[in-house]
Amino acid sequence: MFLATIGYNLEVVRNIIQQETGIVPDQVLKLRGGDINHVFYCQSKNNQWVIKLNIANKYPEMFKKECKGLQLLSQSNFIVPKTKAVGRFEKYDYLIIEYISPGEGLNWELFGENLAHLHLLSNLQFGLDYDNYIGTLVQKNTLENNWFDFYSNHRLIQLCSLARDEQLLTLKDCKEIENVCGILKEIIPSCNPSLLHGDLWSGNVLSSENRSPVLIDPAVYYGHPEMDWAMLCLFGSFPDSSFMKYQEINPLEKGFEKRKEIHQLYPLLVHLNLFGKGYYNSVMNIVRKYN
Image (tube, rainbow, N blue to C red; front, top):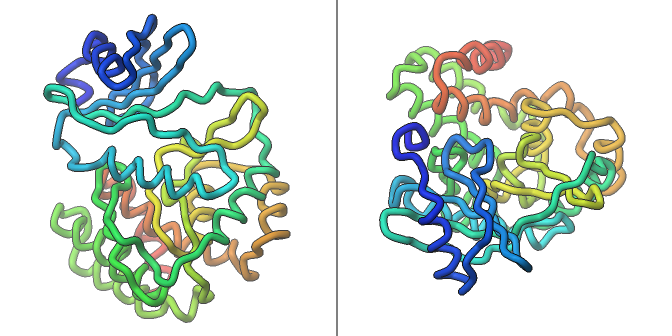
C-alpha cells in the first residue's frame, strides 16, 4: 500500500504550494483518513488549502477526474471545494482544493433539499462522457439510453466479472447476479437521468461553519436518484426529516425502502472488490432473494 511504504515529505508539499500559488505555507499538517491518497492541510497568513498527493500514474488521471466531478457538483446548491490546481511535481501527482472550515453538526434538512435539487440536474443519457473512479476502481460510465441497461452492464455485471477474476465470486454467483439484472425492470421504477454524487456515504458529507452540507470525493455520473440514497442508507445515517425534505421537492416513488437493497448491490460489489470476502455474504444475501 502506498501510504504504508513511501511516507510523506512536508517539504514536497510546501514546494508544490509555492509553485502553484507563489506563497510558502507557514503550516503543513497531515490530515487523518484517506486510504488512497496522502492529504494535507496547508496554511499561510491569508490562505488555507487542502492538497492530495499520490505516486504519479498510480491511478491515472484520478485527480483530473475528481476535479471534473467537483465542477459538476458545483452546479448544485451544495458547498463544493473549488479546485486550485491539478498537476505533477517530481514523482507525485497532486490536487489542491480550497479548505472549508468545519462546523459543529449538519443541517440535514438542507442536505435533503440540496440533494433533491442536485438530482433534478439531468442529462439525455445515463452514464457520463468519461470514466472516473470509485475508490481505486475505475468506474465505467458508458452512456446508455435507459437505467436498466446501464446498471446491468456497467455496474453489476462489470464488477461481477472483476470479482470472478479475483476468485471473490463463483461462476454460479455471477449467473445469479445476471438473473437479477434480467428482472430489474420489474423491481425498479424508470426515471430520468439524475446527476449523482456517486459515492455518497457519511464520510463524504461534511459540515461548513454555518452547518451547511459540503460534498467531497465525488464519483459522479447520471443515474437513478435512488442510488445516492441507497448508498447513504448502507454506509451512513440521516434523520427522517432529511428524507422528508427531499420528498417534498423530488419525490422517489413508493417502495424505496423495500427495493433500496437492489441499488445497494453496486456499492457492496465495489467493497467486495476493494476489501475482499468480508462483503461476500452481504452481496449474495441480496442476490438470492431474487433467485
